[in-house]
Length: 101
Figure 1 (tube, rainbow, N blue to C red):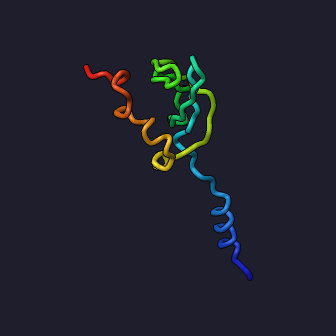
Figure 2: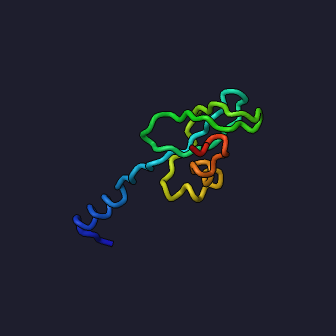
Figure 3: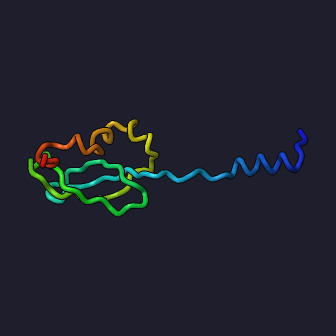
């Protein structure tokens, strides 16, 4: 089948168009004390995560540090990953972490 040069150029540019980068990343954060891991989503351009949370192994508040990147995601995809639905919401934290003032 014959295609005109303009149509051929349009079809080629559509095929090679780059996708926009994902705006969030899923990372594994590891407890400094026991090695327990949690998955978190963070903005792609932000600093590495460090946060204090309850470690179920030692049952105390400990420091978690970002260990490695798992994958890139978009904001609307967080709801599709069960481990991220509640871990990224502030109101889902235990009372000992999100104390009422």
